[in-house]
View 1 (cartoon, one colour):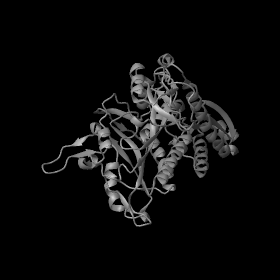
View 2: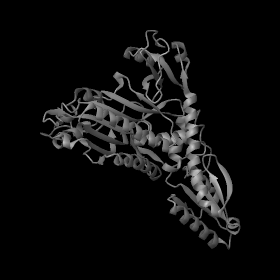
View 3: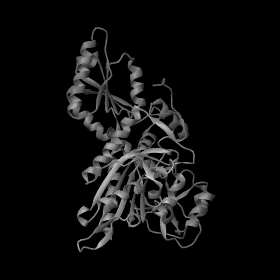
View 4: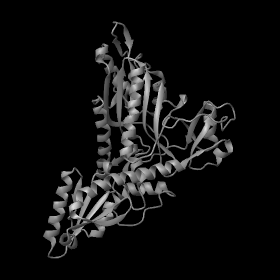
Length: 475
């Protein structure tokens, strides 16, 4: 860990703060020297794995099964669905083919890798629903400025690809995908907006696209998960056909779901962090409670023994606990665990041992207090819940304060680093004009978590409004 010094002001200098926290908390190393590719270090991978486990457990508990497909996709597969390839081909990393072999692509997403196999596996209604997912990395030739975890050429996510007999079943799955994401984000203390993307902004090849946006400290939003109703747009070209109960051949209806693990980690880091480092809720904290012994000469054994006793008690209630008995001075340990976001610290010295008390410290509020040793488990579990509640309230309050309702073009132009709620005509040309004239405000779609009725004409062009949309600058 680097020596203690204040981080930049996150709200005023987010980019500088973010770069420093990634380096100083030993989360990523950007020195790999390939644009858009970084090394995920152990401190980050522990967070990544906790996010992944939460999402995978939710999928498995709802009937999904895990698979792993090759990272390469034949270009003939990628080009089978025209809308899809038009949306992705410019971003594809291609692998030079040997003479006589087909050109390959590193997967930008896995529809075209998986669905040729679905055509081999699905024969009748008895094979449905088919609900499979894989966890891994995808590759897109991002041309804009890259930012670790937020926008890169390689990122870590989960893809769930499901096939059903009909549209109703598929749309029910989309609702389930939304619930899975909501449950995870609530455990991570993150506020979010759920929108249905506009027609021109859907996933390439989808009938409907729903997305989760989180507000970042600089006022931009970060898309961290999407789910799509694909209809039969992929099952027709890939011939994913089943015999229904009447013996007729039909194309399956499909969905795909992509929670972005890298981006969820970026949101947790960015939204909760402060000038002292990371602030992690219990569910994504690799070390939930750190115990720091502060032994006095001649009393080392008693202090270390008490620390180990406390560790054992917390592990019995499934709290991830660490006793740091290293030779570092206590102050350096305090700084280290505050920097990496450990939610709670327990300090044990000679006085604590003799008085049978424990000194607690909470990272999110940076408060220290004493507790009777006999109250250990109750105290930790109480504050575990309260930390999540506090971080959630902070996140929700920031999102609430960032949303501004506007009525005119002038109000939109004057809005800076806000999320805009506005009446909209629904025309793509109008959305493109908004983005150009406001230097980046994008029509993100219509909220489905908090639907709104139109209250006036389109705020930008003045014509009849057909919907209320969210507009924001985005990563």
